[in-house]
Length: 75
Image 1: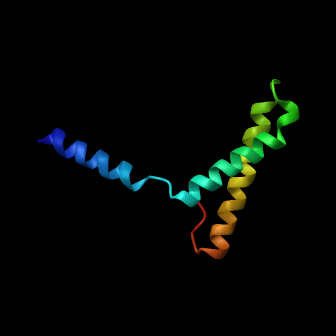
Image 2 (image 1 turned 180 degrees about the vertical axis):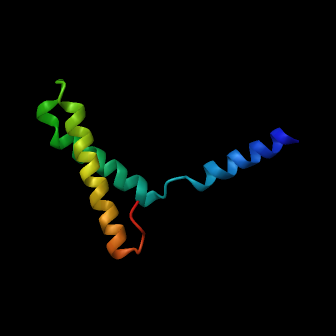
Image 3 (image 1 turned 90 degrees about the vertical axis):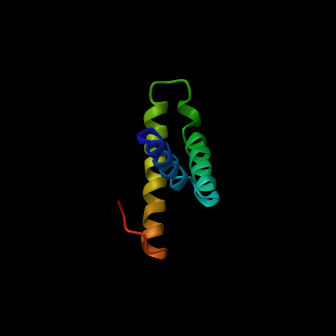
């Protein structure tokens, strides 16, 4: 019975955390933009830092948009 409860709980938690189509589209767009911005550094040690920096910049921008227009609190 304990394992059945854990299975139901795990399913419920994962079902609640799925991305909406808008979030998925934004994430893909941010990834493509970051890849495009760091294209000249591809194959070097600086590519991952450039990619992470750009992803952070785009995610911060999206959090600001949500806070300003959709009344979502910043993390």
